[in-house]
Image (cartoon, rainbow, N blue to C red; front, side):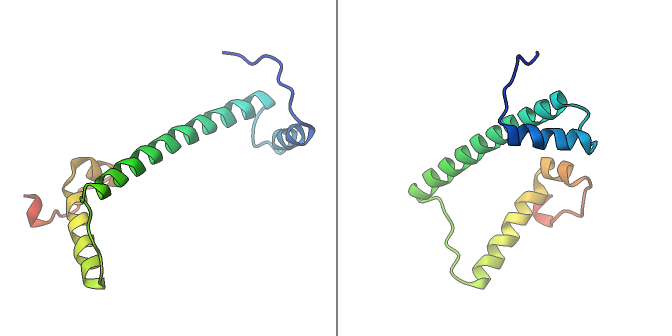
Length: 106
């Protein structure tokens, strides 16, 4: 894949040139490729956030939610959530280690 000619506003070109001069990127092309990659990742992240938000709204509307009215409610919910997290194999993978698991995981 290649770029055709890209016409950038002067202030953006100056910013890119400054990054190249400072040695943060090797070239204008490298800067633009990295910028495009990051932008694509941001768009994917936004899609994931919207999907999760819509799922949360649907759950709430269906009555699938937890009411936390007191500090004790918050602590109970936190403990339950952390137990579910620690019992999930993928969570242990991302944490990079296998902590001692709660008895409820066994």
